Amino acid sequence: MHDAIAAERLGIPAAAVITDRFARSAQVVAQINGLPGYPFAVIAHPVANNDDATLRAKAEIAVKSVVALLTRRN
Image (cartoon, rainbow, N blue to C red; front, side):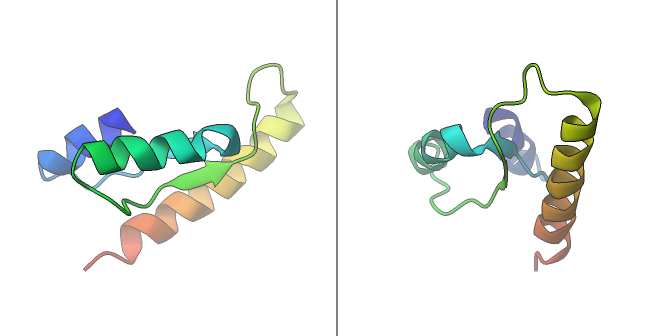
């Protein structure tokens, strides 16, 4: 979330990918950084120790979410 916010402040469109366990923390970080409601992609937790098929499935979800976040901006 920090990297996405930093990029946005530099004028670089960005999208964070957060696991569901940390979604609330990501919302708080956005709020503290003056971007309440900043959208981010959410995938299932955990990522560590996932097999290749599970990681690919999570990556597909993340990519679809990130593309949607980046393309529906004004």
